[in-house]
Image (spheres, rainbow, N blue to C red):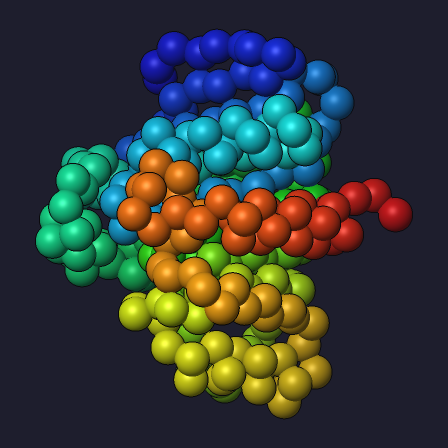
Length: 241
């Protein structure tokens, strides 16, 4: 199952769990404290389970105390990682959305089964393609108490009738993948069905502005602000009241 390491009160490990008889890979970062912690499913962009996503998982564990599982959404495709946008698009298109949803259900079961996880305090964060799946989790997975989507595609407005948890959405106004109309539809969905949700717009940012491994799109100030908002939102939903 891979090696494990503990640094500054955080243990990291490559893990595996089973979905539909298929082995799914993942990266787990958790506080070394034996107390049951809140947890986060961290869903990667179309590039795959990159070092950047693993670093975000470590930050969530080390700085905020969240046990964080980043499942490899391309496990059924050989756990590949893309080097070019063309490769990434091909991988994303080859991934079955229904299979990914089943794999995320399996990831949730895996987390809930860990003695160091509080099963009543679980959230999801996703970026790009993973942001799309984070929104889907918010309408399909009743274990999720909070969902954060960074620049994910928005489902039809009727979908939000079935929203199961509060949503925080980060929109890059110069995104060429997610349209302004989609984000307006998201806000309308919250209002129409009386569901809790926030949308934050970053006027000068483009798609993937949070990814500090990609200097051509990374925007440090927008990344900092969106992260602060994300942590505040998660704390408001996953902290024991």
